[in-house]
Image 1 (cartoon, rainbow, N blue to C red):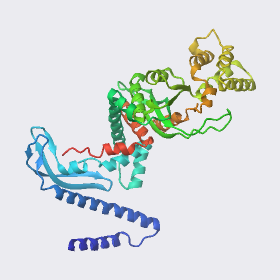
Image 2 (cartoon, helix red, strand yellow; image 1 turned 90 degrees about the vertical axis):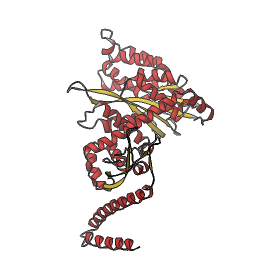
Image 3 (cartoon, one colour; image 1 turned 45 degrees about the vertical axis):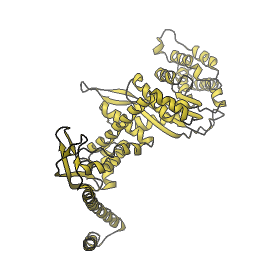
Image 4 (tube, helix red, strand yellow; image 1 turned 45 degrees about the horizontal axis):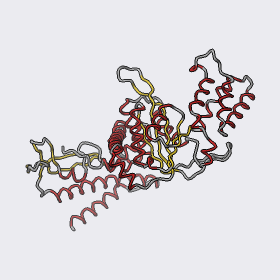
Length: 444
């Protein structure tokens, strides 16, 4: 009781010195905030002492069963309240070549590193902001200086954790016993949507100073209760719900298992109706054909329309004629008359050009190859969405807003980790990753 009284009296004196003669409410708030930071650090260090006292009498036993002699070892960890120092029991097993520290294991302490909570918040800022800007923002909000390298490290740590999580998902998804169990026991969604697209990320080449652009493949699973427009000019509001994103910078054959694994996690493979939206890229539909042969495949309406304007530009010198032609062909496309669309484009083919050099031939090939994915009247009648706004938003939020910030050139490994961490954050999975990273301590 005497110790408590002294602490209270000392705290009163300290507060009086720190917050005397304020000039404004803002100054009062800032002083209190800094005061609470110091108090928090003091309480945290005292708490560690109390927790250490609870387990100090326990024997140190290695997993191999060997009882270890104790040493007292000091450590420092960087917490949300600043650096904290503490002392605890430590033992080393020469046979297993591992250090054992009960306090570290119990609380997930990380000697000489960021605490789990500091890493969690730093990683969140790192996936939301460029690291240099995020460093300034983090210090302004938390009063804790944290370098841009530290934000980078935290964001990558969460991306690495997401990679480990995905590896577990893939293993589960290819475990036939697990798949059969899900088929028996899981609640089958009535209707589920999937969408796949890609964006570009500036990647530094490994064998030299030159750099190049790589495709960041992005996928999404979601549901929606909204309905598509009945008329082409009606307002289009998707209102996707329960959205989860996944991504990677890799070839299609390596991305394919992740598509399947995330579908199993969302139980999309069990949906009574599975609708997959894409832009028409061959690699997308190859993956869909492999894993979801019964899914309804839909080429996004807006991507389908993008091929018409280049044709009109070539075919008509007059702007009004070109616009009228595009509107007419769009109407045919909306009504599902692909023969009329292909015929309208074919009239303007320039046979003297190679197919890859002629936008008209590209359009004809595109509509011909994807005509079975453009039955828009049937899709609308069934209440299916025909626009891939959800995946375009995902690509924008992951690739454009974070990975393509001005001047950013990424190492491939860092780009994969940060993009995956951001996808997990946008999916609302940050807490799950934080739980996985709570106890990662290594005795030191």
